[in-house]
Each structure stands twice: as C-alpha cells, then as structure tokens.
Image 1 (cartoon, one colour):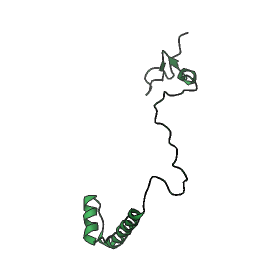
Image 2 (cartoon, helix red, strand yellow):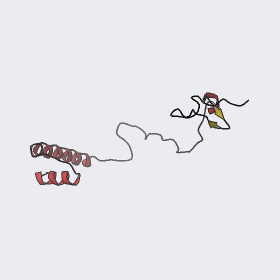
Image 3 (cartoon, rainbow, N blue to C red):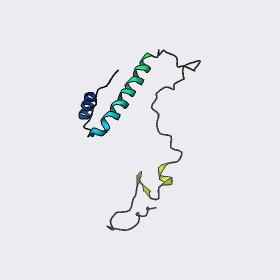
Image 4 (cartoon, one colour):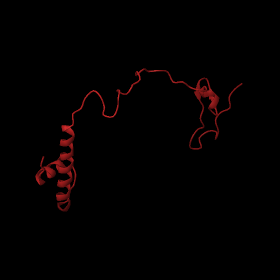
Length: 103
C-alpha cells in the first residue's frame, strides 16, 4: 500500500497535528512502512491455537469476590471510631491531631 504526501497531510489535519514541511517526507516513509507491516500481518493465518503452544492457555472464570482483608481496617488506622477513619483537621482549623477515642 502506498501513502502519498497528501495522505499524510490529511491524516495530520484529522489528528490536529502541526507537521512542518521538512518532516513530511520522513513521516510519509514511516507511515508507509507501518502500513506495509500491517498488510504482512494480515496475511498470517490465525486460528484457534496460538503458535508455539500445544494447548490453549487456561483462563480463570471471571467471578466477583468480596475483598479479603487480612486485618480489619480499625486495627491499622491511627484513629478509628464507629466504623469510620478519624483524620485531623487541615489548615490549622481545630486541633492538630486526630480526636482521641472514647473508651
């Protein structure tokens, strides 16, 4: 497949690319090379089996599972109360540290 300079200018315009005149010949050659390679790939016969594998790869079932937390979040949080993380106020408003837990 051949690519003309006008083709490259049109592609650049569609992609909103600012391509200078000096780089157009090289860009034309590069795009032509890419398209030539793609045309070679299209000639390769694909099938159910992948080359080099004696059997198709095993795929796991796509099953949604709940998150497996090794530890409850309250045990790793510096301040945790009623199922919520307690965080310090920002910007110097209020106290500088997280509120203490009531025991």
